[in-house]
Image (cartoon, rainbow, N blue to C red; front, top):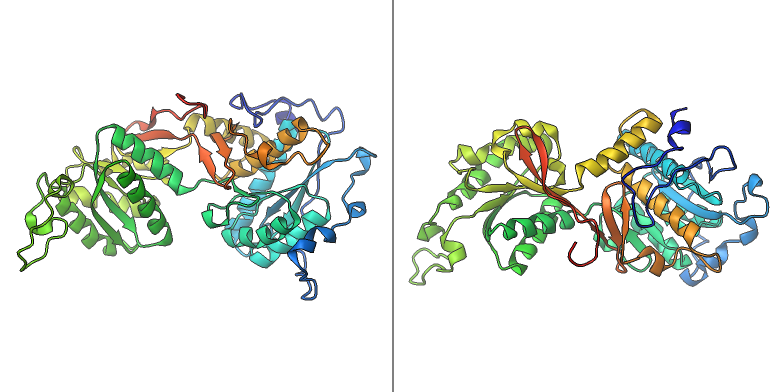
Length: 446
């Protein structure tokens, strides 16, 4: 099995922090234990809906899972909640790959008394709550997962009531806090990073061309906040339905605001048949210097050429995007040439991808790195924190120095959100290049 040889080596990129993979000489000695994924758990009976304060009383320590080979040694039990039997084939494949990544992290850490306990959420809220209770019944001291936002909300009710921390994989910020930490890729971080970089290049006037979706709402709202906070202005924003034909009119309207001097009738607060003058603020009399276009894939390749088609000078106007732009196919799109976006450093992620592929024979999906980092973080905390109490305290999880993982630097905040060190990448004909590297430390000045 490929994984047997891989676990004897470690990722070169994990150089500091507690999430730093170390070489492992297991399997010559008893290694960490990984339970098999449990079968779907039946929903709780209606009569077992007692007060949250009594949640912890459900769990009998004498019933906690105890691997035979550990003897009397008390293991560190960690629950992993994933949608192994979800209705969606894609979700099941992602769950399987995330479980593989978690196993890889366990062996990289080499912590002998670490017990990973996979639980099936079935891909829905009811299954997630039942899976969380099953993990706690087996003695889980920390929960990793679930994946979907509705599952996180349901499992969080259980884990909060039991006083057990959870590191979830959703990017829905409404679930964060009070013992729930979101180890994910929230778009707000990408938007903040690319906006900061663009404005450091003396860009202050922006346009927005975003889909009329929840994601589009979230990204455009974050962009507006970042721009205004930093003293810039959104000259014009257009939204569109995600259909190639429906993109034409919004792109044409946005293109009109790219002029050096915006005509009076198009300026902010202009009212026809009124004596009130239009705004004379500099931000609304001149066109934008950059356009945020948070689209991806095939739709992005249909949308991007519309700006030059409607006479936007893309040699003068910079196109800004999101981490989904990290796609080699986009280097063949002339309209995106020179475009900027924020994302993990490709060299760092490539090391993890090679490590995973060497173990399992296939490249990992992007979300696999979340399971790897969460598991390795848990293993490191379990190895370094003394067993007077739980190793998974809020103070330990939210170490302000952060950790270095499969996608680079990150840290979990007391409010449950995540911070990440992201690079600025540029689309060039020869490939996607890092033009501003990701930070390597959360210390000031790095």
